[in-house]
Structure formats: C-alpha cells, structure tokens
Image (cartoon, rainbow, N blue to C red):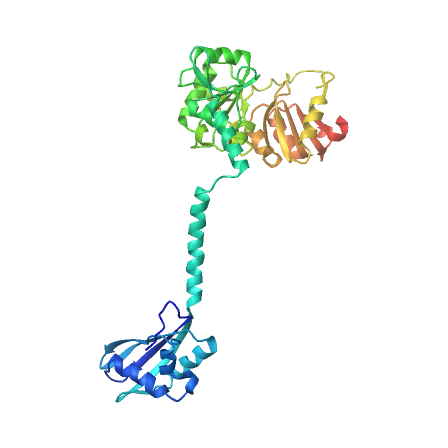
Length: 411
C-alpha cells in the first residue's frame, strides 16, 4: 500500500477524540475507514487516497481515563486545501467506535509549509550572520582598518624619560597630557596625534618643561586616580586646561564621540586649585559634564560716609569683547561667566544663571541670551557682579547698581 511520508505532506489534520469506553487504536482506525467509506464519493475514498499516496499514515494516540478513552487523531495530507478540509470535516461524523459512543472534534489543520518556511528563515539568518563574520570587508572598511593600524603604529618615545607620545607632539602648539600608553594609543586610533603620557602618578621633569612651553590640557580617567593625578599636576606644573573622562570610565576605552565631548568640556586649570585649597566648588554644567567655577575675592564696598555719589562708569570701557561673546550666545539660551580679564570661566544654561550666581561670591561680568529681570539683577548685586550683558532688559539702568548693557547698546 502506498503511503505519504510526513516530508511530502502539505497539511496535517489534528483532531481530538473522546470515547465512552476502552478501545484499542486499530478500532479507531477501522472506524475512520469504515464510517467514511462511500460517504464522500470515489474521488475522496480514504483507502484509495492512501493507496495513491495522497493521505499518509493515520496516527492515533489514546489514553484511558476513568474507564474512558481520550486522545488525538493525526492525518497527513497532500491534497489541496479544500479537499483536506472535507476529509477533516468527515471525521466528525464518527459517532461510534466498536460498542462505544464517541465524539470527534477537529482542532486545526496545520500548513506544514509554514513551519518549514519559518525554519528556513531562521536558519537563513544564522547562515547570513556567519557569512558576514567571515566575508571580505569592502574597500572602505579595508581603508579604515589600515589607516587605524598605521596611526597606532605611529606611537613614539619622547623626552629623556622615553614617554609614550603621538607623532604630532613636536610641531603642535597644544598638547594633550594623558595617564598611560593605552590612552595615547586610543587617541591615535581616533586621529589625535598630539598626546603624551605621564606613565605614572609622579610628574616627569620633561612634562613640567613642556607645560611651560606649550598649551597643555590634562585628560585623565574619571576615577579617584584621575583626581589624584590632577592634584599632583596642579601643584607641580603650569597646566592650562583640565578635563576628565565620564565618571567610571578610562580614557583608553572612550569612543571618538566621548573623547571630543570631553575635550570640548575642558576648563581652565585655575579652577581646580580652588578645590585643592578647600574652597567651595560651585557646579558648572558644560557640554553634559559638571565642572567647577572659581570663587573670587569679594569686592570692597565704598565707605558709607563718602560725600561723592557713586559713579556708574568709572572710566571709558571697550565693550567689543562683550559684543562678540553676546553674538556667540544668541540662539543658544546659554550664559557666559567672565573674570576681570574677560576670560570665560564657564558656560551655563540661562535658566540656571540665578542658581549659579547665588553660589558665587564674586563674578566680574555675566553675558547671556535672554532678558535681564529684577531677580537676576538682584542676585547679581549680591555676587558683586560689575556688568550684566543680555539681548534685552526688563528693567531700567537706575533700578540696579549693576551696569546693564543690551544688544542694542553694543551695536
């Protein structure tokens, strides 16, 4: 008798059967053939379909439960959808198996090709993933890999201490000072060639001389070790700027984006001295990192018994630097904090300007993108600010002791 193997079947009929008594599997199979014989016509006769291979082996699974039998009937089919559905529906006419009443209910007709298709898709994904791992890279990937390798091979030894350094340290006016060789390698990998490593916590003499000759930015890890190295550098060398990796990260593991963010967030080294000396460290938010602003000495107030009125402008000032910095801020909603030499000590969002000024006993000038309000003017007076520069002002000059300048007045 010809039979259909499960591999060639397109559909699987899955039916539940309940029998009011105990019977054997051959009894169920015999009832299926016997009670459907002649019911569907010669074209859908189960015995003939099985001989021709269009219906596969009928599987019956039975379990006796309290004197009854329950189980499943599984019939593979290579007929089309309509013919398979007719065969499945015909099973439900079986009402007796042997001497016992029975009830058959078709649960589902499963399309075997769907499960096979799912397997093919999943397997194809696995094969593609393996292929991509071993396939030859394109020309761009090859170029980048070779260029990166060449950059990392450019590491050199510098100074009498033979410190690891990038090839650009000699001709560059600005130098990045890092902790170790791995940091230099990572910067080279990202195309930064003007770095040199200390190779330890003590500051080499050549680094001290380098700080006198060039603009040096210390770039340390975001941990306690990095803080200790900064303290040592500040106390022994003439650093210009400092910056740190994000908390808990090391310079050697930073991505290109993280490196550039950290370098843009550098601050003047003088600010770090206030922390070393135990001064309160106001927080400055700049490019996503928290930095410290220095605490300036408070200005001396004029004697109370003076007879001459306080002059609002002691001498003619050149406000061109104020104008340039204000134009830089327009549209950013940011604020600059300036010292007496008009050096930018830091940048904060305009919305945090009042909070920042409250923590600073003395600031020479504040420039921000926004409008001067009574609240800002009052806080500025308390911090002995000499000038407030903004795009517009909501108060008149005679309402505050602080000199007020707007964009219109600077044009």
